[in-house]
Picture 1: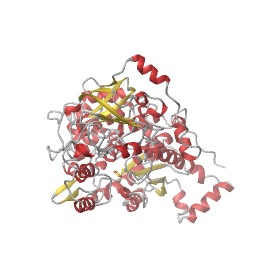
Picture 2 (picture 1 turned 30 degrees about the vertical axis):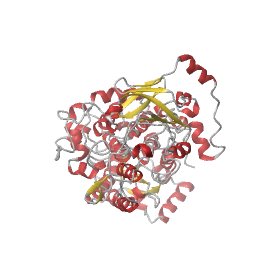
Picture 3 (picture 1 turned 60 degrees about the horizontal axis):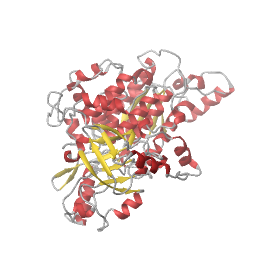
Picture 4 (picture 1 turned 90 degrees about the horizontal axis):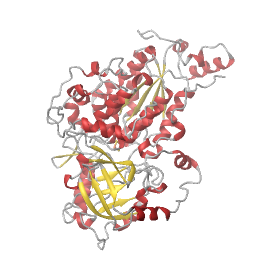
Length: 575
Ligand code: FES
């Protein structure tokens, strides 16, 4: 048994301790698993919720990492039980992994609720897996530690480093512009994903695993370790050891996630120059914890937090460089005056204690508030008659010349329409045009696919143009870049103002004023609204129907309305 003493009886004992017919049945089946009588004598049973799957390119190492977690659990006197959960493979799953984040959250919560589990290790990292796992675990509120999958190694091609996503978009434009050959393109594709692990730019995966760590759910610097590094194996083992102690200490998510730890996460997001997707996920995580977080909180914190990390897509380096430069811990130590340091974490210590004394080894990669890349975080919340409930732009990944921009709109009602027309040589377009894609929101998409970085029309690419203003109710990959206004809420499919725009209308974007407006008269605006027709039902059955009937809008975190907290977490009856 662990060196630590249990603070209360184990939850799993409800299944095994009673001398009843049912309790005996449970025991006999535990023996069938090869476990012994001693394993049931008040040892914590740790559920390892693993999102390993052969279909998930980013999690291919998580099967063997689960063995390291198990080693740690056994070393500390716990009993590991691995439980697979749906894996959300960002690149393959359609229409969007975002549509399935809530399914993973629901599955995680119910796996923990319905089985004899005392504490859990969550294993994920590919984009939506991190928030999905954490949302479920927060709702179930058993001791929880998160083991991030870790980023893959740097990509390489002809002496250059390549970044996931970012360089795909970049070289795709070069291919379309006729600057590289099909052979070059193929060679580049073979060099960009060299190892197991998540995207190694500061995309959604690394943003969200960093946020999980700052909130207190991972060991110090866990999120910065590259997936293939042996330090990643040791981190998995330490996490296994630590979860057993957490059960003994009864240290639960409700002790860890607080308003201040959420604010710390937003500060880290701004300092990292992280993904726009994080706004949706952090709101969802906060709301699972009954913290009423608003888009405006990001705006307020962003104005007070400098942008400090020089990683693609907003900067130059990659996650491997970030780790060698000191990682997240060193970044946080460098900005400790901006953080709430007393927040409790999974280590049993405060955030301030965890990061104390960690050093920045490469100031080119990790800056300090005294010498920032930009004085403010790059994630800006816009409002106006086009986005009454908000929209988001990653200003530090956009060409500054478009930050204040007025231009004519070209509107696409669907991705297919956009794909069909965007390269039409007769399209009347210049770099001043504003491209609009609508019906790509939570319900319209469905699941807000990452279509927000609309392609630059081929004829402009050939002229050397690489950025222009694009507006949508979609999301964009955290590895994308450009002047892309995203998450426009409410979405067009349910009658949001984006549905009122016509090709040729003038639109005004102002990053300085945080505004996004359609320049038509109020009378015209009202007339268009009156002529709007309701959209048809997206799905007649299945998970899709559940999704569109219950998903909330982007500014509310896109959780299901029925998964938001409504009282104490119910435990199952054991009969
Ligand atoms: Fe899995 Fe990017 S595709 S993290």
